[in-house]
Amino acid sequence: MTDRPLPTSTEVVVVGGGVVGVATAWFLARRGVPVLLLEKGRIAGEQSSRNWGWIRCQGRDPAELALMCESSRLWEEIAREVDGDIGFRRTGVTYLAESDADNARFEAWLAHARAHQLDSRMLTRAETDRLIGENRIDHRGALHTASDARAEPAAAVPAMARTLAARGVDLRAGCAVRAIERAGGRVTGVATEHGRVRCRAVVVAAGVWSRLLLVDVGLALPQLGVVASAQRTTPAPLVTESAVGRAAVALRRRADAGYTIARTTAATHEILPASLRWARLYAPVLKRCWRTTKWRLGLPFVEALTAGRLDGERAGPFERTRVLDPAPDHALLDDVLAAAARSWPQLAGVTPAQRWAGVIDVLPDELPALGPVPDRPGLIVATGFSGHGFGIGSAAGRVAAELAAGEGAIDLAALAPERFGPVGAGVGA
Ligand SMILES: Cc1cc2nc3c(=O)[nH]c(=O)nc-3n(C[C@H](O)[C@H](O)[C@H](O)COP(=O)(O)OP(=O)(O)OC[C@H]3O[C@@H](n4cnc5c(N)ncnc54)[C@H](O)[C@@H]3O)c2cc1C
Image 1 (cartoon, rainbow, N blue to C red):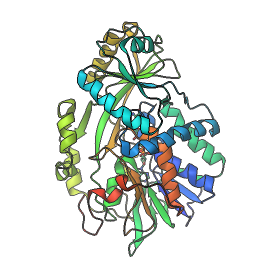
Image 2 (cartoon, rainbow, N blue to C red):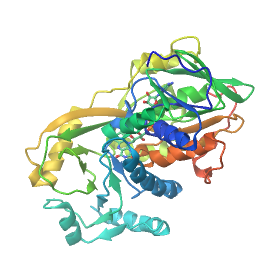
Image 3 (cartoon, protein in one colour):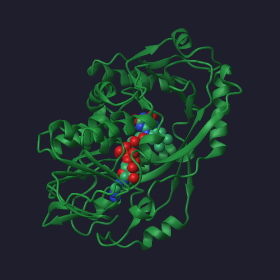
Image 4 (cartoon, helix red, strand yellow):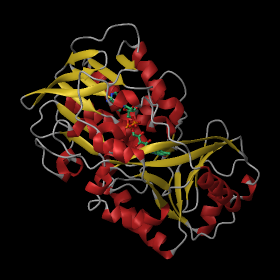
């Protein structure tokens, strides 16, 4: 937070300084719409600097594929405009097929790729080996999208924010929004820890915290959090420039000549009352991820049970936790590193330079909630990116900016924030 007092009014307030919030501010600024971005901790302090940096169309749900294709194009544009190198490179994404079921799933997805003129294709065993380098993986080829990209998460969003600030856009870190304010149904502004700001529209791009802000204004979003761990290595021999995913290990070449190495489905879920409330909706995800998820039940459950409503006058949960910084799962990361060395002998002996974890915000259908909220004029939601929001973040920000500026956007019915239940008073979190 700077010493400058907050403005008392603006056109649009964006809550959250992750990729989605900063991209929203980016496209509002481009339209000349006055915007104030408020971040409780640091810009990109949570998911947006902790992710793997994959910018992929490959494997996306058809409901978000058009948006993702646009996002890939926008990342390229942003990379040209920002102050500094964000490591954007079109080096491809490759999923190894390790079973007949993988092959069938990948083949089926290619129909969606063709509908969007993507260059995705199946690689033979020999083509795969040429692409991913000497390996000891028992694979049957791969699904590959050469035009998919990567960028450096620790650099990208901070660089966008710096560029915006240099252009005079008002972004404040260390300023929590305590509650969204309304008169009747309409959004009128936000109550922050540094005073109230009136505005015509509020964009909630608050990552895993969005549920708390939204339930307070009558939208019960079944959003949960899972902790995912990752690590970067010291500089390592180049095995491939492409990001590669297989069941045991996923890796991406980094600008610093190391790899970001982790495992896709491995996560830990801290059980909250909301987990129980929404368990039925999550049944399909649970069925798939039951064995790869660790479960924790502790103090956060009790704290959530006893938490009161948000109060604009008093410090609340957003000030208590400025930056979510969970401990990484070292046992898991040791195992993943060993799997990487077994897969690529050249990586044997490579050591971790840093390990971290982030809380991924998920929704039951693993699609974002992106759009206006019925009966809440002025409220726009852009959250629930379910572990793949870095790639799609730039286009999501553009859509949120268009909606906040009062422009019509693309058809977003499949991503409607109210798709899980009606908006109204008395909804439970
Ligand atoms: C380990 C890991 C690997 C991943 N890998 C990939 C990948 O390779 N590719 C990909 O596309 N995606 C990936 N993701 C997912 C991606 O990082 C997220 O989907 C994306 O960053 C979400 O961006 P966001 O802006 O919605 O949320 P966040 O980045 O979480 O930002 C939300 C911000 O809102 C702020 N905030 C919350 N409440 C308030 C409040 N009341 N007032 C003010 N500020 C508030 C928070 O402090 C936070 O900074 C990964 C995530 C993790 C954790």
